[in-house]
Length: 220
Image (cartoon, rainbow, N blue to C red):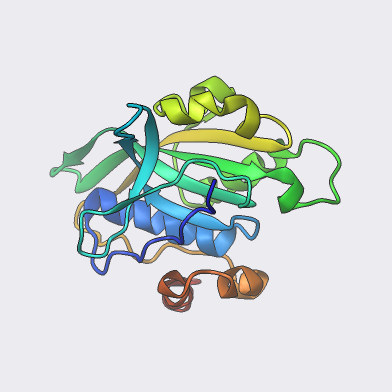
């Protein structure tokens, strides 16, 4: 299997659901030092020859092209977002509610070869702590392999190879609110000094966005 493609460029001026997902991408990029790649929303792709489904992400390059982002054992870790149901707009309260999930996958050996045990729970704690600081609501954490990539039959077929130890996966579902008139800016993030190597390793199309975001919004 080829190595997962680079993360597509961020949107220049996203709104509503797209803006919230991008805000979370930036939050994870700048705050989770072990996360190698944070993709945006995944949609269900269908392989023409087999009819099998897989997670795909839009290239955001002005074309209709998408990339296959199913698990890849050459990558140490990555995540992507799913939209669970329609978002809600409350004009009276100036509030928008989004219902999202984020799927994480990791090769534990590549992530930290010094740990000779399954440290998935440590990764989950990092993410749930990060979302708590992000003022998310109640979280639902799914660790059963058959329920994490259940939308994607191509991944289900590879379950024994890519969803079992030393590989790890989990899905976190949550509701998150924002002001309807907000442009999704100003979220506090961790110091970039803690993650300078992580940021430097990002694709060029993403790196400067993360650096700019931290400079503009840290301690905001």
